Length: 248
Ligand code: FPP
Image (cartoon, rainbow, N blue to C red; front, side, top):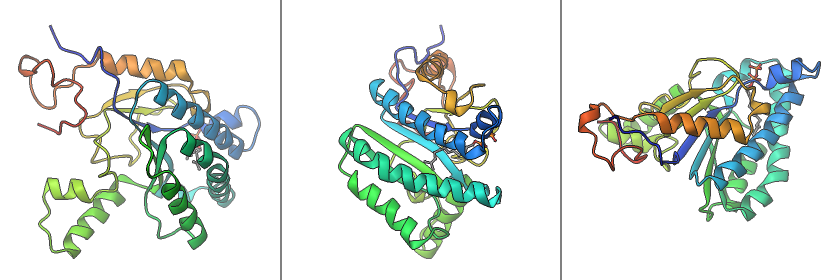
């Protein structure tokens, strides 16, 4: 019989938090109101992940392509991140969350960059949950910046060297990638790291993504057989669901 992850909680969950704009538009509210609800949904999700023993949560908050949105939405999202940091960092710190911002910081203002660094430093000793907030992030940007780094150091570009130079080198690859909002796309998220992730697409808009929706995603993950390029028959009982295992 096929071996599944039936008893395993995914160690690393990554989420494309899609649907904030539609959530707001359906209520005749400005899109930024949906993003504010999105922050509340993220807070709930962080709590739910900790309660379920998930070790790493990576979320897509602002993509390299999101600069092309209307200027008022872009500035609204920047302001929201600043406000959310000021409001949430003390409780993230108290709750054992280690915060990382993953993405290209060059385009951000000095003040903004300093805020991200301060938030990371304030939570760096925490061990309960690693929260990676992908901000001005794109999977293609990440692969290109890693390759540039290796080239500048005169290193050979191998899979292992690239893996170590990527912006998410501090965590194992995601076991489960969730996208809310009903779209079936990866949208330049974790292009390298999701090579062997399980995918779950939820029709729920991100502000409506609740504990039950997370549990459903985990249940779907548990029903999957992770083969990492092997056959079912080859899988040793202890190999399924091992998040540190790389592609075979
Ligand atoms: C996609 O929904 C969502 C975003 C581009 C932003 C995600 C941000 C949050 C959930 C808030 C957390 C933010 C910070 C700053 C930490 P969409 O706007 O594309 O929705 P739509 O597809 O319905 O238009």
